[in-house]
Length: 221
Image (cartoon, rainbow, N blue to C red; front, side, top):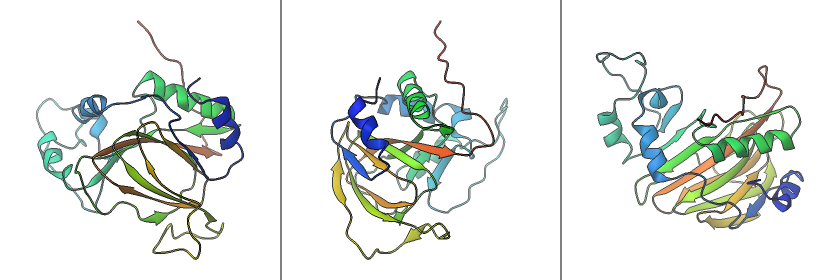
């Protein structure tokens, strides 16, 4: 098991929590580099640059995946913006295994992996103070991230996900280093601030999906 019994117990309490040095190395910069150079993986549905800009490019020869960021475009944009991949739960065996363990912990759940990264040493922006529609287990892989986590929740009728401030202090204001993790319950406010070039994996846990969870069988040849 990659999620210890102690961490499982705390996650199932459904409260904001911080777990220092809780996970082994489950991903790497080299694996990220490989994904960025794998054309189908940087399609505009899976790969996002957090800046609100629109992009377009010409179709190139022999391409069956035409809605994919050209690598030369990414070479410039990655230096200026925070980025992430969704639909990444099968990028390696460990990440797939964590998704499977979380799905077994929560009945009728479906788990994905989102890979967040910043390659600039210092970069402002990001999502700001916000909440999500799913529980999230966030594991720091490389670099440092200042993470603010509130035991304060958006009302069920609230639809605006980003706020400028909150009337209470965060229960956690920590620097996440490699191996550290936080658990963020759904609708709990939180904010991530890059302290350096950094890489993390978020595991969103959703419920009530119309489709079944992904097949977690891992092929070995």
